[in-house]
Image (cartoon, rainbow, N blue to C red; front, side, top):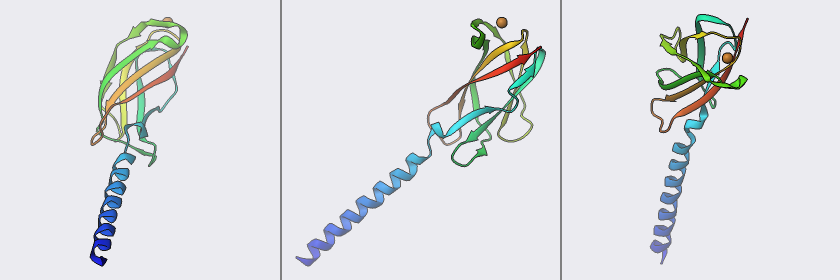
Length: 135
Ligand SMILES: [Cu+2]
């Protein structure tokens, strides 16, 4: 009788450990990451450098070595989504910072769409950032 109770208690404890384990794993989520512009306003013109930082929101720390796989820069914020410009990745200057070169041919709102894979995380980070190109 007694050993049966112990066995049940032991099994219950194991289930508890397993559930705690999966809860810990689920806490690291791709939604915890986001890109932020270092400078929201950039002077319009050729070969401008746009710098973004990838942040882990739970720690507040920059995230290095992400793989950027999709970028688009267009004037969607000003109703000109067909007005797109080429985005060229540039070497970052510090870990967790990602830089791009682009020609902002017109003053106004530009939307930078970014997709990225983070080391050790499933899913993708997808953000749209709005830059103001100034005259
Ligand atoms: Cu335009």
